[in-house]
Figure 1 (cartoon, rainbow, N blue to C red):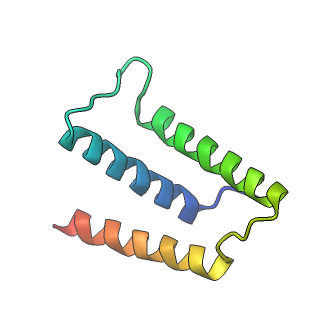
Figure 2: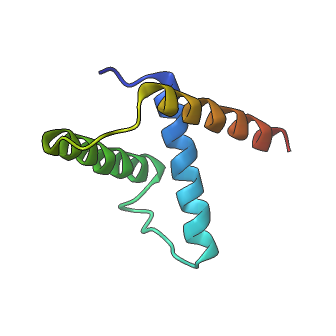
Length: 84
C-alpha cells in the first residue's frame, strides 16, 4: 500500500509523543544518529515488521475502520494542540 498523508501525519504525531515522553524521563537521543526522521522511520519499520509477522501467523489485526478512526483522532488532537 502507498504511504498516505494521514499515515504520515499519524506517524509524525506518534514520533512527537515519543520524543516528549523520552524528554520527560531525561532520555536523549543522539542527534547525530537519531534525528526526527530517523526515529519516525525506526517506528515505521518496527510496526511494519509487526504487521507482516502477525499476518503470517494468522493473528487478527485491527480493521480499517478502527485504524481510520485513530488516524482522524490523532489529526484532531494534533490540530487542537497546535492551536494552544
